[in-house]
Image (cartoon, rainbow, N blue to C red; front, side, top):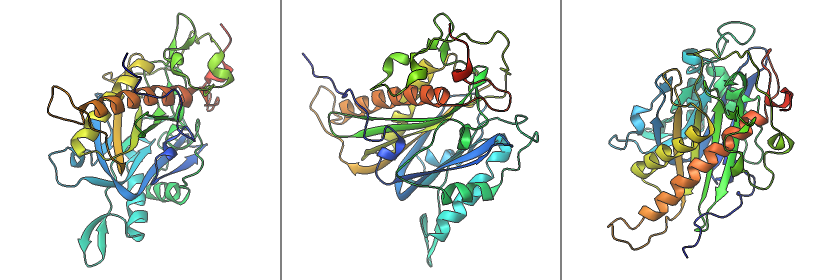
Length: 340
C-alpha cells in the first residue's frame, strides 16, 4: 500500500509564519472597516500568481508570469479599499527600499518587487471610500513580525464579508512527510458562502486538524434569511508560501492548485463578481525531493504533493478566517449566529 504523502498535523504555529524568512504585518482601521496585510520576504522569494475571479484588483501580477524577467518578490500586499487600496503598496515599496531590499539596480539602488491584490470593502466604514494610502502600507511593515499572527477582523480582513456574514483573515500550515512546509494566508470577502445551508457547518470542516477551529468549529448555525450579499462587492485574496526550492513555473502550478481549496471551501467561488487571486511564494530553503517514474520530470510527484497540501491549507485558512471574525459594522459574524 502506498504511504500517505501528507502528515496529519500542521507545522509549529499553524500559520504562514512557519515558513522561515517571512514576516507578516497588519494595519487595521476599525472605523474605516479597511486595512492592509503585508507579507515581507526579507531574503526574497520566487513568486508567481494565478487569478481566477473575473473582477480582480491587482498590481504587478504580469511580472510574475514565468516568461517574464524578474523571479523574486520582496513582498506581497493584500488590502481592502478596492482600487484605492492598491496605493498601500507604495508604502511597502518605500519601506523595503530604505532597507536595501529589492531588485538590484546598481549604484546602491534597489527596486523592491511588491505585487498586490485588493478586495472590495467600500461603503462599510465611516466613509464610503476609506483613507487608505501609502502610509497604511508602511505601518503594516512597521508591525511585521515572525512569531505571532493575528486573524479575523485584522488587516485586509477587517472589512470583509463572506456569503452575507462577517468575513476575515485566516492562516494555516501543513508539514509534509518529505520535510517541506506549505502555508496559506487569506482575506475572505466572498460572494459565495463557506457554510453548507443543509447542515449549517463549513463545507470543508472535515479538514480540521487538532481542534484548530475551536468551539466555533463544532457548531451548526442557522444562516440569516436576509443577507447583505451584494454582487460586485467581493473578492478573496491570499498567498500560499512554501520553503521548497521552486521555479516560477512550479510556483504558478502551486498557486493554480491552491484555487481548488478555495473552490471547495467557498461555494460558489471564482464568480463574475469576485477577483479571486492567489499568489505563491517559495523561499527555496529546502530541496524538492525527486522520484523515478514514467515521466521525465523527477520532481513531478513532489509538486503534486505540494499543490494538494496548498489546496488543503487554503481551505482551512478560509474557514479559520471566518470562524475567528467578530461581528463588526453591523455585519453578523459566525460566532453570533443562532445554533441550528
